[in-house]
Image 1 (cartoon, rainbow, N blue to C red):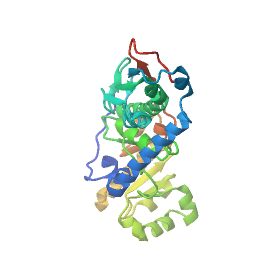
Image 2: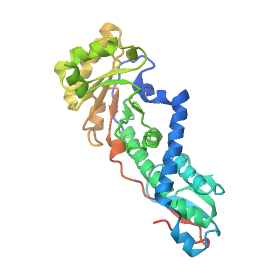
Image 3: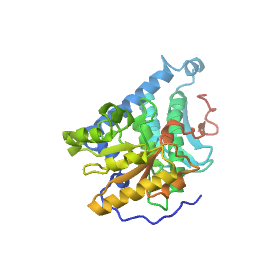
Image 4: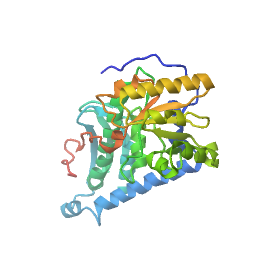
Amino acid sequence: MKGVRRKRPSKPTGTICRRGRAGESRTQGAKSAARNSTAEAIVRLAIEEDLGRGDATVAALGLGSRMATGAIVAKQEGVLSGTRAARAVFARVDPALRWEPLLEDGAKLTPGAVIARVHGRWGSIVSGERTALNFLQRLSGIATKTARFVELVSDTGVAILDTRKTTPGLRVFEKEAVRHGGGRNHRFALDDAILVKDNHLLAAGGVDRALDRVLAAKEAQKLPVIVEIAALRDLSRALRPGVTRILLDNMRPAQARSAARRIHAYNEAHGASIEIEASGGITLANAAAYALTGVDCLSIGGLTHSAPALDLSLDLLPGEGASAGR
C-alpha cells in the first residue's frame, strides 16, 4: 500500500506534530520514573489476576520442574510490540527463567517468525504464557494498526497521533505500542498540555472567553495550548498569539482543507507557527484524504480503542512438552 504525496508549506522546527512534545515530555525525569513504576505495577496485577493462588494444572501434573524452552511465534503479519511487558511477566513468575530476545519491538512480523525464546522450568513457562501473550497480542495489534495508518500518509509529512482513548491502566504500554508502529503520542495525561475542548468551551462561554482565561494562566507559559474547533465560524477566534495548535474536530476533508488554508495564511501573515490537527471519524479508508488537506497531524482514537489483537502463540520446542496456557 503506497502513501499519498503533497507539497507541504515550510514549517518551523520544534513543532509538536513533528516531535510529539505534548506527550513525549513525560519521558523526562520524575515522569519517566513514574511511568516505569506504573509498568511494573501493571505486570504484577496482571499476573495476580491470572495466577490466583497458583497454577492448579501444573501442580496436579507434578511436572513443573522439568526443563523446557518455549518459543513465541507470530501467526500472521504485523508489527511487534510488548516484549518489555512479556519479559517482565516471565521474570516475575520465575526469576530463574531466561528470556532470549530474537526480535525487537517495532520489527515487522511474518507468519512463523520467532519473537523470543524462554528457557527454564516447564511449569513456570506455561504459568506465565497466557499473561505474556495477552500483552504481546494486544500491543502488537495496536502497533500493527498504527503502522497501517503511518504507511498511508508516509509521503505527506503528516504525523499519526494517538489519543487518551486507551484501556484503563494500560496506557503506558499502549502508547508505547503506537510509537513502535511509527506513530506519535498525543498528551499522555491531563497535565501534559492544555486542550480546550467542547465542554470547556461550553463552561467558559465560548472560544473567546475560554482562551482569555487559558492564555492568562501561568500553565499556558510552560505547556502547549491546543483549542478544539468544530465549526469554521469559530476559527478566527482561535487564531491568536499563544495558541500552539488548532484541533479540527469531526470536520469533513473539504472543511479541513478550508480551515488549513486560513491557518497557514495567518501563520505567514503573523510569523506564527500554529499547528493543525484533524480528529474524529478518521479511518483507514479516508486517512489519505485528510492528509492531503494541509493539516500537520491526524489523531485517531481507534489506534488504541479498537485495534484487533495479533495472532501469536507460545510453543514448547519438540520433545520438551506440549503447548498449554489456553
